[in-house]
Length: 371
Ligand SMILES: Cc1cc2nc3c(=O)[nH]c(=O)nc-3n(C[C@H](O)[C@H](O)[C@H](O)COP(=O)(O)O)c2cc1C
Image 1 (cartoon, rainbow, N blue to C red):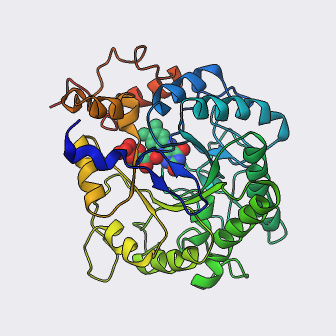
Image 2 (tube, rainbow, N blue to C red):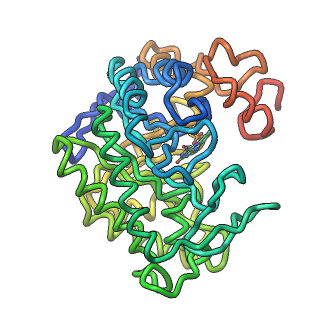
Image 3 (tube, helix red, strand yellow):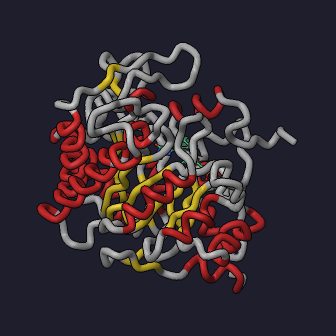
Protein backbone atom coordinates (compact mmCIF):
# COMPACT_ATOMS: atom_id res chain seq x y z
CA UNK A 1 0.00 0.00 0.00
CA UNK A 2 1.18 3.52 -0.72
CA UNK A 3 2.13 5.51 2.41
CA UNK A 4 -0.18 8.36 1.44
CA UNK A 5 -3.18 6.06 1.93
CA UNK A 6 -2.16 4.73 5.36
CA UNK A 7 -4.35 7.30 7.20
CA UNK A 8 -7.44 5.67 5.64
CA UNK A 9 -6.63 2.55 7.62
CA UNK A 10 -6.12 4.21 10.99
CA UNK A 11 -8.67 3.14 13.62
CA UNK A 12 -11.04 5.77 14.96
CA UNK A 13 -12.51 5.96 18.47
CA UNK A 14 -16.09 7.19 18.72
CA UNK A 15 -17.30 9.03 21.86
CA UNK A 16 -19.33 6.03 22.99
CA UNK A 17 -16.14 3.98 23.18
CA UNK A 18 -16.55 1.98 19.98
CA UNK A 19 -13.46 1.72 17.83
CA UNK A 20 -13.91 1.68 14.06
CA UNK A 21 -11.15 -0.31 12.41
CA UNK A 22 -10.63 2.34 9.73
CA UNK A 23 -12.04 5.58 8.33
CA UNK A 24 -14.33 4.25 5.61
CA UNK A 25 -18.08 4.08 6.15
CA UNK A 26 -20.76 2.80 3.80
CA UNK A 27 -23.29 5.60 3.29
CA UNK A 28 -26.96 4.79 3.92
CA UNK A 29 -28.57 3.72 0.65
CA UNK A 30 -32.10 2.50 0.16
CA UNK A 31 -32.03 -0.56 -2.09
CA UNK A 32 -35.74 -1.49 -1.97
CA UNK A 33 -34.70 -5.15 -1.85
CA UNK A 34 -36.35 -5.93 1.48
CA UNK A 35 -39.48 -8.07 1.37
CA UNK A 36 -42.68 -6.12 0.76
CA UNK A 37 -43.72 -6.62 4.40
CA UNK A 38 -40.54 -4.75 5.37
CA UNK A 39 -38.63 -7.81 6.57
CA UNK A 40 -34.97 -8.25 5.68
CA UNK A 41 -34.26 -10.38 2.59
CA UNK A 42 -31.36 -12.69 1.79
CA UNK A 43 -30.61 -10.58 -1.28
CA UNK A 44 -30.04 -7.47 0.80
CA UNK A 45 -27.88 -9.32 3.32
CA UNK A 46 -25.62 -10.57 0.51
CA UNK A 47 -25.45 -7.09 -1.03
CA UNK A 48 -24.50 -5.50 2.29
CA UNK A 49 -22.01 -8.15 3.42
CA UNK A 50 -20.10 -7.94 0.15
CA UNK A 51 -19.62 -4.22 0.80
CA UNK A 52 -19.06 -4.43 4.57
CA UNK A 53 -15.91 -6.53 4.20
CA UNK A 54 -12.98 -4.38 5.20
CA UNK A 55 -14.76 -1.09 5.91
CA UNK A 56 -15.12 0.42 9.40
CA UNK A 57 -18.87 0.93 9.61
CA UNK A 58 -21.94 0.23 7.47
CA UNK A 59 -25.03 2.40 7.73
CA UNK A 60 -28.13 0.71 6.32
CA UNK A 61 -30.59 2.39 3.98
CA UNK A 62 -33.30 4.28 5.81
CA UNK A 63 -35.52 2.06 7.96
CA UNK A 64 -38.98 3.42 8.56
CA UNK A 65 -40.06 3.90 12.17
CA UNK A 66 -43.76 3.92 11.27
CA UNK A 67 -46.04 2.16 8.82
CA UNK A 68 -46.67 5.41 6.92
CA UNK A 69 -43.00 6.47 6.83
CA UNK A 70 -41.30 4.23 4.29
CA UNK A 71 -41.07 3.04 0.70
CA UNK A 72 -42.06 -0.35 -0.72
CA UNK A 73 -39.10 -2.70 -0.31
CA UNK A 74 -37.14 -0.42 1.97
CA UNK A 75 -35.96 -1.43 5.42
CA UNK A 76 -38.48 -1.20 8.20
CA UNK A 77 -38.20 -1.07 11.98
CA UNK A 78 -41.76 -0.26 12.94
CA UNK A 79 -42.76 -3.50 14.66
CA UNK A 80 -41.21 -6.19 16.82
CA UNK A 81 -41.90 -9.04 14.41
CA UNK A 82 -39.20 -7.57 12.14
CA UNK A 83 -36.48 -7.96 14.79
CA UNK A 84 -35.36 -11.49 13.77
CA UNK A 85 -34.64 -10.34 10.20
CA UNK A 86 -32.88 -7.23 11.44
CA UNK A 87 -30.84 -9.49 13.73
CA UNK A 88 -29.72 -11.59 10.74
CA UNK A 89 -28.63 -8.42 8.96
CA UNK A 90 -26.77 -6.96 11.94
CA UNK A 91 -24.95 -10.19 12.69
CA UNK A 92 -24.00 -10.75 9.03
CA UNK A 93 -22.46 -7.27 8.80
CA UNK A 94 -20.72 -7.63 12.15
CA UNK A 95 -19.39 -11.07 11.23
CA UNK A 96 -17.14 -9.45 8.63
CA UNK A 97 -15.80 -6.91 11.13
CA UNK A 98 -17.75 -3.76 10.24
CA UNK A 99 -19.90 -1.95 12.78
CA UNK A 100 -23.57 -2.16 11.82
CA UNK A 101 -25.68 0.99 12.15
CA UNK A 102 -29.39 1.15 11.33
CA UNK A 103 -30.54 4.42 9.81
CA UNK A 104 -33.92 5.27 11.37
CA UNK A 105 -36.23 7.52 9.41
CA UNK A 106 -39.67 8.72 8.51
CA UNK A 107 -40.18 9.98 4.97
CA UNK A 108 -43.02 12.39 5.80
CA UNK A 109 -44.23 14.05 2.60
CA UNK A 110 -41.62 12.18 0.50
CA UNK A 111 -43.45 8.88 0.92
CA UNK A 112 -44.96 7.38 -2.24
CA UNK A 113 -48.66 7.61 -3.16
CA UNK A 114 -49.06 3.93 -2.24
CA UNK A 115 -49.03 5.09 1.40
CA UNK A 116 -52.60 5.84 2.53
CA UNK A 117 -51.82 8.49 5.08
CA UNK A 118 -49.00 10.78 3.96
CA UNK A 119 -48.11 13.19 6.76
CA UNK A 120 -45.89 16.19 7.34
CA UNK A 121 -45.43 19.02 9.79
CA UNK A 122 -47.68 21.10 7.49
CA UNK A 123 -49.62 20.53 4.29
CA UNK A 124 -46.65 21.38 2.07
CA UNK A 125 -45.96 18.79 -0.64
CA UNK A 126 -42.59 17.73 -1.95
CA UNK A 127 -41.52 20.14 -4.71
CA UNK A 128 -42.14 17.77 -7.62
CA UNK A 129 -44.86 17.34 -10.16
CA UNK A 130 -47.84 15.33 -8.98
CA UNK A 131 -46.64 15.28 -5.36
CA UNK A 132 -49.33 14.49 -2.82
CA UNK A 133 -50.23 17.17 -0.30
CA UNK A 134 -49.49 15.66 3.12
CA UNK A 135 -51.86 15.74 6.02
CA UNK A 136 -50.60 18.05 8.76
CA UNK A 137 -49.75 16.08 11.90
CA UNK A 138 -51.83 17.15 14.87
CA UNK A 139 -50.05 18.35 18.00
CA UNK A 140 -51.44 15.24 19.74
CA UNK A 141 -49.80 12.92 17.19
CA UNK A 142 -46.31 14.40 17.39
CA UNK A 143 -45.20 12.83 20.69
CA UNK A 144 -46.19 9.43 19.25
CA UNK A 145 -44.03 10.09 16.20
CA UNK A 146 -41.08 10.93 18.46
CA UNK A 147 -41.66 7.77 20.49
CA UNK A 148 -41.63 5.78 17.24
CA UNK A 149 -37.98 6.77 16.76
CA UNK A 150 -37.31 5.49 20.28
CA UNK A 151 -39.10 2.23 19.59
CA UNK A 152 -37.14 1.71 16.36
CA UNK A 153 -33.98 2.29 18.39
CA UNK A 154 -35.02 -0.34 20.90
CA UNK A 155 -35.57 -2.79 18.03
CA UNK A 156 -32.13 -1.97 16.64
CA UNK A 157 -30.65 -2.67 20.08
CA UNK A 158 -32.54 -5.96 20.42
CA UNK A 159 -31.44 -6.93 16.91
CA UNK A 160 -27.79 -6.48 17.88
CA UNK A 161 -26.93 -3.39 15.84
CA UNK A 162 -23.94 -1.35 17.04
CA UNK A 163 -25.90 1.85 16.68
CA UNK A 164 -28.50 3.97 14.94
CA UNK A 165 -28.25 6.99 12.69
CA UNK A 166 -31.08 9.52 13.03
CA UNK A 167 -32.03 10.56 9.49
CA UNK A 168 -32.43 14.30 9.80
CA UNK A 169 -31.40 14.91 6.18
CA UNK A 170 -32.48 14.71 2.54
CA UNK A 171 -35.85 16.31 3.09
CA UNK A 172 -37.18 13.51 5.32
CA UNK A 173 -39.64 14.20 8.14
CA UNK A 174 -37.12 15.42 10.72
CA UNK A 175 -35.74 17.94 8.23
CA UNK A 176 -39.30 18.86 7.22
CA UNK A 177 -39.87 19.94 10.81
CA UNK A 178 -36.71 22.05 10.88
CA UNK A 179 -37.32 23.65 7.51
CA UNK A 180 -39.23 26.95 7.42
CA UNK A 181 -40.35 25.87 3.94
CA UNK A 182 -42.14 22.69 4.96
CA UNK A 183 -42.97 23.66 8.55
CA UNK A 184 -45.64 26.38 8.54
CA UNK A 185 -47.04 25.54 11.97
CA UNK A 186 -47.91 28.20 14.48
CA UNK A 187 -47.90 26.00 17.58
CA UNK A 188 -44.89 25.04 19.72
CA UNK A 189 -43.53 22.84 16.87
CA UNK A 190 -43.22 25.63 14.33
CA UNK A 191 -42.60 29.31 13.74
CA UNK A 192 -39.38 30.37 15.45
CA UNK A 193 -36.12 28.52 14.82
CA UNK A 194 -36.25 27.29 18.41
CA UNK A 195 -39.70 25.79 17.84
CA UNK A 196 -38.76 24.22 14.51
CA UNK A 197 -35.76 22.63 16.22
CA UNK A 198 -37.93 21.08 18.91
CA UNK A 199 -38.88 17.97 16.91
CA UNK A 200 -35.30 17.08 15.83
CA UNK A 201 -33.96 17.60 19.36
CA UNK A 202 -36.77 15.67 21.01
CA UNK A 203 -36.10 12.78 18.65
CA UNK A 204 -32.44 12.82 19.73
CA UNK A 205 -33.44 12.93 23.41
CA UNK A 206 -35.88 10.05 22.96
CA UNK A 207 -33.31 7.94 21.14
CA UNK A 208 -30.76 8.62 23.89
CA UNK A 209 -33.32 7.83 26.60
CA UNK A 210 -33.97 4.45 25.01
CA UNK A 211 -30.24 3.80 24.54
CA UNK A 212 -29.54 4.53 28.18
CA UNK A 213 -32.38 2.24 29.20
CA UNK A 214 -31.70 -0.72 26.92
CA UNK A 215 -28.21 -0.61 25.38
CA UNK A 216 -24.59 -0.87 26.41
CA UNK A 217 -22.96 2.56 26.89
CA UNK A 218 -20.99 1.92 23.71
CA UNK A 219 -24.11 2.00 21.48
CA UNK A 220 -23.48 4.45 18.62
CA UNK A 221 -25.89 7.33 17.98
CA UNK A 222 -25.24 9.46 14.89
CA UNK A 223 -27.24 12.24 13.25
CA UNK A 224 -27.45 13.09 9.54
CA UNK A 225 -28.15 16.59 8.26
CA UNK A 226 -28.52 18.36 4.94
CA UNK A 227 -26.80 21.73 5.35
CA UNK A 228 -28.92 23.97 3.12
CA UNK A 229 -32.19 24.04 1.17
CA UNK A 230 -32.79 25.83 -2.12
CA UNK A 231 -36.21 27.23 -1.21
CA UNK A 232 -36.86 30.63 0.34
CA UNK A 233 -37.73 30.38 3.10
CA UNK A 234 -35.61 27.26 3.59
CA UNK A 235 -32.77 26.00 5.72
CA UNK A 236 -29.79 28.37 5.58
CA UNK A 237 -26.31 27.89 6.97
CA UNK A 238 -27.32 30.00 10.00
CA UNK A 239 -30.12 27.50 10.69
CA UNK A 240 -27.73 24.61 10.28
CA UNK A 241 -25.11 26.08 12.58
CA UNK A 242 -27.77 26.70 15.23
CA UNK A 243 -28.83 23.05 14.97
CA UNK A 244 -25.22 21.88 15.04
CA UNK A 245 -24.61 23.91 18.20
CA UNK A 246 -27.59 22.23 19.82
CA UNK A 247 -26.51 18.78 18.65
CA UNK A 248 -23.01 19.28 20.02
CA UNK A 249 -24.57 19.45 23.49
CA UNK A 250 -26.23 16.05 23.02
CA UNK A 251 -24.34 12.81 23.44
CA UNK A 252 -23.76 11.92 19.80
CA UNK A 253 -21.01 9.91 18.17
CA UNK A 254 -20.95 11.72 14.88
CA UNK A 255 -22.58 14.25 12.62
CA UNK A 256 -23.05 13.08 9.04
CA UNK A 257 -23.17 15.88 6.45
CA UNK A 258 -25.27 14.64 3.53
CA UNK A 259 -24.16 16.16 0.23
CA UNK A 260 -23.84 15.04 -3.38
CA UNK A 261 -20.37 16.56 -3.45
CA UNK A 262 -18.48 16.70 -0.15
CA UNK A 263 -16.80 19.96 -1.14
CA UNK A 264 -19.93 21.85 -2.30
CA UNK A 265 -19.63 25.53 -1.55
CA UNK A 266 -22.24 27.12 0.64
CA UNK A 267 -24.99 28.95 -1.24
CA UNK A 268 -26.65 30.41 1.83
CA UNK A 269 -24.09 31.57 4.39
CA UNK A 270 -24.25 35.35 4.06
CA UNK A 271 -21.64 35.44 1.31
CA UNK A 272 -19.34 32.81 2.83
CA UNK A 273 -18.95 30.44 -0.11
CA UNK A 274 -16.49 28.06 1.52
CA UNK A 275 -17.48 24.38 1.47
CA UNK A 276 -20.43 23.76 3.81
CA UNK A 277 -18.49 21.00 5.51
CA UNK A 278 -15.66 23.38 6.37
CA UNK A 279 -18.05 25.93 7.90
CA UNK A 280 -19.87 23.24 9.88
CA UNK A 281 -16.63 21.68 11.12
CA UNK A 282 -15.69 25.00 12.73
CA UNK A 283 -18.83 24.82 14.86
CA UNK A 284 -18.94 21.11 15.59
CA UNK A 285 -16.35 21.17 18.39
CA UNK A 286 -15.37 17.63 19.32
CA UNK A 287 -18.28 16.05 17.46
CA UNK A 288 -16.68 13.95 14.70
CA UNK A 289 -17.91 14.57 11.17
CA UNK A 290 -18.65 12.08 8.46
CA UNK A 291 -18.21 13.61 5.03
CA UNK A 292 -19.85 12.10 1.97
CA UNK A 293 -20.41 12.91 -1.67
CA UNK A 294 -18.59 12.01 -4.86
CA UNK A 295 -15.51 10.58 -3.17
CA UNK A 296 -14.42 8.16 -5.87
CA UNK A 297 -10.69 7.58 -5.65
CA UNK A 298 -8.17 6.79 -2.93
CA UNK A 299 -6.69 10.26 -3.52
CA UNK A 300 -10.12 11.91 -2.98
CA UNK A 301 -10.50 10.12 0.37
CA UNK A 302 -6.93 10.75 1.54
CA UNK A 303 -7.35 14.44 0.70
CA UNK A 304 -10.56 14.64 2.74
CA UNK A 305 -8.81 13.13 5.76
CA UNK A 306 -5.94 15.53 5.36
CA UNK A 307 -8.43 18.40 5.32
CA UNK A 308 -9.59 17.28 8.77
CA UNK A 309 -12.70 15.24 7.96
CA UNK A 310 -12.07 12.15 10.12
CA UNK A 311 -14.58 9.73 8.57
CA UNK A 312 -15.50 9.31 4.91
CA UNK A 313 -18.70 7.68 3.71
CA UNK A 314 -18.94 6.13 0.27
CA UNK A 315 -22.29 5.59 -1.38
CA UNK A 316 -22.41 5.02 -5.12
CA UNK A 317 -18.72 4.16 -5.07
CA UNK A 318 -19.27 1.06 -2.91
CA UNK A 319 -22.14 0.00 -5.15
CA UNK A 320 -19.83 0.27 -8.17
CA UNK A 321 -16.83 -1.28 -6.43
CA UNK A 322 -17.42 -3.33 -3.27
CA UNK A 323 -13.68 -4.04 -3.11
CA UNK A 324 -12.77 -0.32 -3.06
CA UNK A 325 -10.82 -0.40 0.22
CA UNK A 326 -9.28 -3.81 -0.37
CA UNK A 327 -7.80 -2.61 -3.65
CA UNK A 328 -6.15 0.32 -1.85
CA UNK A 329 -4.83 -2.02 0.86
CA UNK A 330 -3.29 -4.19 -1.85
CA UNK A 331 -1.74 -1.23 -3.67
CA UNK A 332 -4.18 -1.72 -6.56
CA UNK A 333 -5.99 1.62 -6.27
CA UNK A 334 -5.60 2.07 -10.02
CA UNK A 335 -8.04 -0.83 -10.46
CA UNK A 336 -10.86 0.89 -8.56
CA UNK A 337 -13.99 0.98 -10.69
CA UNK A 338 -15.49 4.46 -10.86
CA UNK A 339 -18.01 3.64 -13.58
CA UNK A 340 -20.62 0.96 -14.05
CA UNK A 341 -21.00 -1.20 -17.11
CA UNK A 342 -24.49 -2.20 -18.25
CA UNK A 343 -23.51 -5.83 -17.63
CA UNK A 344 -22.24 -5.37 -14.05
CA UNK A 345 -25.33 -6.17 -12.03
CA UNK A 346 -24.78 -9.86 -11.28
CA UNK A 347 -21.11 -9.80 -10.49
CA UNK A 348 -21.58 -6.78 -8.20
CA UNK A 349 -24.58 -8.44 -6.48
CA UNK A 350 -26.75 -5.36 -6.97
CA UNK A 351 -30.37 -6.23 -6.14
CA UNK A 352 -32.79 -6.13 -9.11
CA UNK A 353 -34.84 -3.34 -7.55
CA UNK A 354 -31.81 -1.10 -7.03
CA UNK A 355 -30.44 -1.90 -10.47
CA UNK A 356 -33.79 -0.97 -11.98
CA UNK A 357 -33.74 2.44 -10.28
CA UNK A 358 -30.15 3.06 -11.39
CA UNK A 359 -31.06 2.23 -14.99
CA UNK A 360 -34.15 4.45 -14.90
CA UNK A 361 -32.25 7.51 -13.70
CA UNK A 362 -29.64 8.42 -16.28
CA UNK A 363 -26.85 10.59 -14.96
CA UNK A 364 -27.15 9.37 -11.37
CA UNK A 365 -24.41 6.76 -11.72
CA UNK A 366 -21.54 7.14 -14.19
CA UNK A 367 -21.57 4.49 -16.93
CA UNK A 368 -18.62 3.26 -18.94
CA UNK A 369 -20.11 4.28 -22.25
CA UNK A 370 -20.46 7.87 -21.06
CA UNK A 371 -17.72 10.41 -21.71
C1 LIG B 1 -29.23 4.24 -4.29
C2 LIG B 1 -29.13 5.31 -3.25
C3 LIG B 1 -29.98 5.28 -2.14
C4 LIG B 1 -29.85 6.25 -1.13
N1 LIG B 1 -30.62 6.13 -0.01
C5 LIG B 1 -30.37 6.92 1.07
C6 LIG B 1 -30.98 6.67 2.33
O1 LIG B 1 -31.72 5.69 2.51
N2 LIG B 1 -30.69 7.52 3.34
C7 LIG B 1 -29.86 8.59 3.20
O2 LIG B 1 -29.63 9.33 4.16
N3 LIG B 1 -29.23 8.82 2.01
C8 LIG B 1 -29.45 8.01 0.97
N4 LIG B 1 -28.74 8.19 -0.20
C9 LIG B 1 -27.68 9.24 -0.28
C10 LIG B 1 -26.30 8.63 0.04
O3 LIG B 1 -26.22 8.22 1.39
C11 LIG B 1 -25.14 9.61 -0.25
O4 LIG B 1 -25.27 10.71 0.61
C12 LIG B 1 -25.11 10.10 -1.69
O5 LIG B 1 -25.25 9.01 -2.59
C13 LIG B 1 -23.80 10.84 -2.03
O6 LIG B 1 -22.69 10.01 -1.80
P1 LIG B 1 -21.92 9.24 -3.00
O7 LIG B 1 -21.45 10.27 -3.98
O8 LIG B 1 -20.78 8.54 -2.32
O9 LIG B 1 -22.89 8.30 -3.62
C14 LIG B 1 -28.88 7.27 -1.24
C15 LIG B 1 -28.05 7.31 -2.37
C16 LIG B 1 -28.15 6.33 -3.35
C17 LIG B 1 -27.18 6.37 -4.50
